[in-house]
Length: 138
Image 1 (cartoon, rainbow, N blue to C red):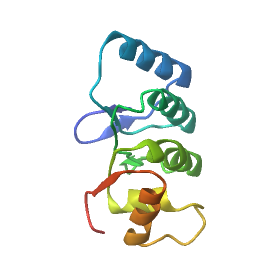
Image 2 (cartoon, helix red, strand yellow):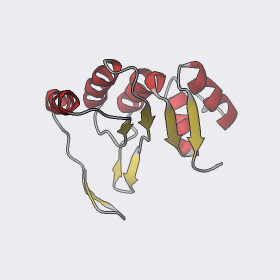
Image 3 (cartoon, rainbow, N blue to C red):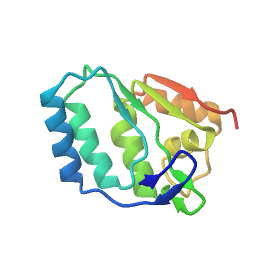
């Protein structure tokens, strides 16, 4: 993304192979205390990140997905949401998300009725996410 602290100007997709190669190169070069994953724009990139993170299961993962960068750039496509829910959330030590994101991640089918917040949190915890910090109550 091309953004400042207030707004997103442009969303571009990164090559998943480049993302994985860059991450592995840094991880071989220096120790890390934790991973922090924020906005990802493509399901293929999420898959690449999940593969890298899986190789470092002793390193905590903080997941803070951002599906809406601003009114113009909405990233809540079903394949992206599903890949984060299926591949990253189960490896997550701490999930930091707002009400809408928690509901989106816990909704198994984008067309199904959305769960309430308690059901969403229970579902995510049952899938392997260790802790959840909700940034609002909805």
